[in-house]
Amino acid sequence: MKEWTQKELEEAGYKIENAQISHADLSMADYGVLTLEMPITGSGWGCVYGGRVIGQGYLGANEFKGSPMGIEYIMRIMDIVGVEKFNEMSGKYIRVARTGWGNPIRIIGNLIENRWFDADRFFENTKE
Image (tube, rainbow, N blue to C red; front, top):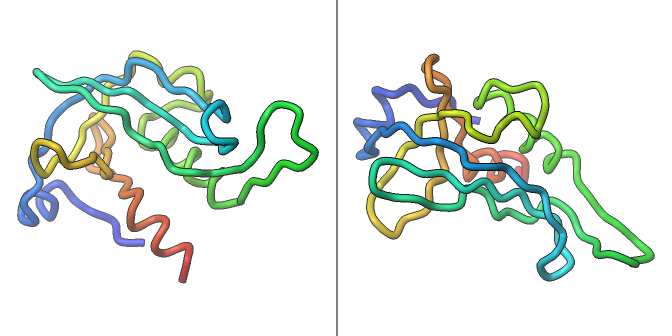
């Protein structure tokens, strides 16, 4: 998996901004799939980070499915945010790499350190 630096992100056309995580939620309420949703807000904008299917199941299901890469995805996000407990992400600040209005945020970074997590590349690499 490619490890970005802020300089590389900026050279690739990304705008780096600070953002705050309002809360982090794991849910299987929609369509019988488990997703992580993390609403984040910046200066004059907001979006929901995540939304990737990392498991399947619903209340009362006979079978539940998950994947090791779904667990690793959550753990990598927690590492970038700088928390050891999932529920501690609420209120934390991060950096985001944005490409413009209407485009999803797929790359988040640690607020202090030059460390980034690119969800698209993570899932592309795990498919290979």
